[in-house]
Length: 413
Image (cartoon, rainbow, N blue to C red; front, side):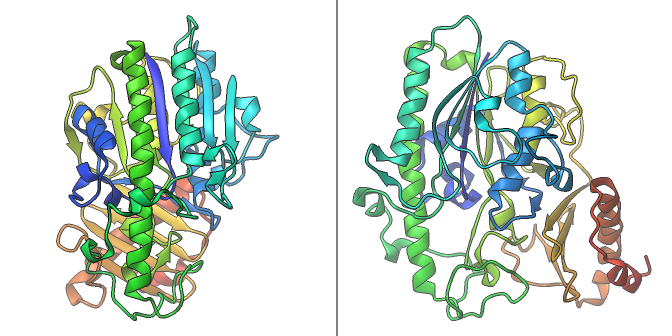
């Protein structure tokens, strides 16, 4: 089977109609969800860079956990996902954004289209809008593909990352007065002091956040139009049903939730992102709420293709979870630099700020927008202690050197 792997940038779960937002127009992404398997709780493990996409994409390409991925450079890089697929008979192609550590992109893929930087100065290039260029190059590749080998096409949109520039007709789809922000966004609220790399004046203004959501949604809908053209090219070529299609993003973003205007935080809008897999042998219209990592797609592709992977990846195939032959991980570990740590088990989520000692505890089932910190409740102590046990195990597993001794001792660990 061919593989079409579409990745966006800075796209949260809030910007997919099929994921519950009835006010956003994403008909083509929604089709993939209807015909595939949707993971509505897929996490990026974290970052060591304010450009969160670099850690996320490095983990994706090399299949290594966060702190091992940080060590990767062009001299010590292990085999990447495209290289491993190439060894198994695939012809590999990329167009769009490249922002991962390791080898140069031309050393990884067989064919390279227009490569965009991690941060665009403008989407409006002399050759057209960057979103349109990425989409049209993917269409052209599919239309002209004439090779006995199956292909792996990595189509990496910069959208909806800033600068949020698109045509007026896309902005017009989202009048400011029709946009509703989550309850975790408060007008004139102070920026969260525990979170660095914030991109808004202090205090937060509701008007500013509404404008950003409008621009973001418009960018997503513009990209969705290009995704539709790409899917049509597969159908016109007669290979739609013989192609595994993955749609995902590297992480999400906060538009004022919990006092954060940015993505370097552990709140749900930033650490989760869409993950949809459409494949001929997967049950259509399946929704999986168990928590997974976005980068679990690395070994999942090999399982879908029945290919033996003579390579160790830290991530886990999602096929046993899809086929209900195995359960999800007991917990999800999250980390941002050395100043934020998180752990989620069942529906309990603990966020730790090592430099200030502040803790936040949320029940994601009862309080998905993380507005009610339960850390001071007497009954929460045992929950926090159990979560800290999981966090300590993850620190050992991921070789996380951040010192949490004081917090562990406080809870008799």
